[in-house]
Structures are given as structure tokens and as C-alpha cells.
Image (tube, rainbow, N blue to C red; front, side):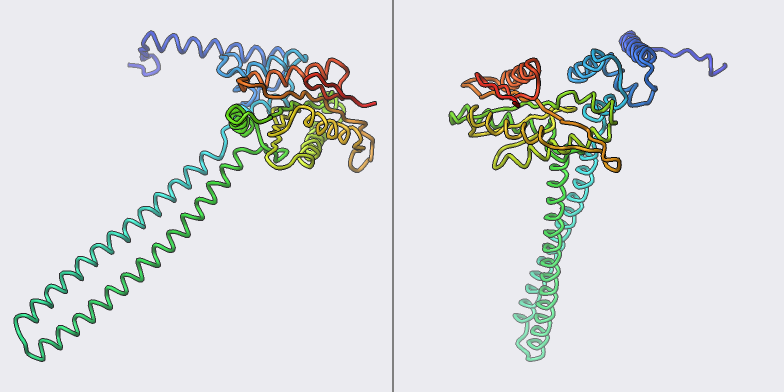
Length: 357
């Protein structure tokens, strides 16, 4: 029978699943063709996830791109890297886990050898004891003493080997712990700006909200967004845009301290967590950051062509008792939207507004 014509039997559930896959693939292909975007694997993967609505954040990000007029490859790559790109940290963790297992196996081997040697030493002592009880001759006593010394030396050597082996394993495990901590920290960082990423922000904000709820302490949250950033990318290129993101992250980092945290929330949007800080204190701090960014004179490397003033808008809000974390973020986003709507280059806080003269 011709193998190429061999029927493939698929259960109804699989047929439905396959139909969905083909449907999503069709939508993805249509979107790519419609917007004239190169059909790179990353692009197709992102459009497929968008069509399947498998991740709300991806749907929102792609919708925003479409609303702005099309699919920009730079933005596609950015969203893909943020939400779909496989990270290396889980691979590194698996490798470290395997090394830890090897070290534990070595320790168990050392302990097993030590127990075996202890049993042998105990058996030798019993044999020597029986030998001494069976005879009282000087030769027997001399032989017993010689054997006792030999067994003692052997046991001492094994004890030293056990100690050295355990010390080496301890050092290896400490090294692996440090590597694991480094991997964990790396997975919490934005690769472009080196500040914390969205994942770290979510974890930290949840902890700070719990602390504020428990202790009744102040907590302010800031959402920041670079104004007209797409125009910068269009006019000067994404490499220049990346450098501006780094500069903005650096300005914020240099102005915060202690338990404050700044994270890249996505694209040109940043989030700042300010524990033990009232909304008035937060607004003063953020206005200083806004002014420093506005006063920064940026020029292109080589040609020294002025880029012009790069401004940012900020939304500042304060945690209220029993407020959910999502509500706190939404409130800060609303303040940011007001700052944008009222002219940009502004700090819009709860009942407070400041802007450049």
C-alpha cells in the first residue's frame, strides 16, 4: 500500500484542536501580509499568540501597535522578547541543579565510605580483643598493638579524607548557591537598561502592598512614560532610542535610594515603587527627575546633531487602606494619562500637578 495515501485517524477532540491551530495560523498570516511585515519566526509566533489570545498582555501590546498604524518590527521584537522569548535562566538553574545533585551524591558516597570504614574498624577492634583474651603471650600482645596502631592510622587517614571531601563539597555547594543567586538576579533585570524588569516589579509591589496593609505605612507608586518616544525612534533610529531609555533609567536610579525600586514596565514605560513615602514627597522627587530629564542636552554621537529636549510624563498615586495591587497600578496609570492629556512633561499626582515652566 502506498504510504503517502495511508489514512491518518484523528479523534474528534484533536480535529477541533487542529482546526483552531489552522484558524490562528491563518489570522497570523493575514495580519503579517496586511501590514507588509517580514514573516520572521518571531513575528509569526507573536501574531499566532495574538490570534489565539493566549496572553492578555500580548493582545494589549499588539492592539496598541495596530492603533498606532501598523506592525513595527522593532516593537514586535520587543514584545516578543518581553512575553514569548524563552529565557536562559531556567536552563542555568537546571544545570546548577544537576551539579548540586552530583555534589550531594559525592557527600553521600563519602558518608557511606566513612560508615563502612567505621564498621571495619569496630570489627578489627573486636578481633584484637578476642586475640588478647585467648592468649597472654608477649608476641600476641605485640601483634595486637601493631594491628591496633595500623587500624588507627587507617581510620585517621579515612577521617582526613572525609573531612577534605566534605570541605571541598561545601565550597562547591556555596559556589553553586552564589551562581543560583546570580541567575535569579539576572532573571529579574531588564537586559537593556539593567534596572529591574516587570517580573521583579510585580513581586516587589505585592510585598510592599502587603507591608503597607499590615503596618499602615505610606506607599507611593509612580508610572512614567517618555513623551513622543515613537517619534524619536522614527527620526533617529532605535539605537538612539535605546540610549535614551538607558539615560532615563540612569537619571531615575540616581535619584532614588534605600528600598525604592525602579523597573522597566514595558517599552518606554517605567514604574517606581516608593515605600514609606507620601504622595507629596513622591511628587517632589519625581518632579526633580522630570526636570533633570528635560534639561539633558542630547546630541548624536559623531555628527553632534541635537536631538532636542526629551521629556517624560509621570503619574503618582498613594496606596489607600485595603486597596488591591491592581487598583493601585490602575490609579497610577490614570494619573499618567492625565499628565499626557494635559500637555506632557508633567507630574500628575493625587490632587497635585506640576509641569515645566
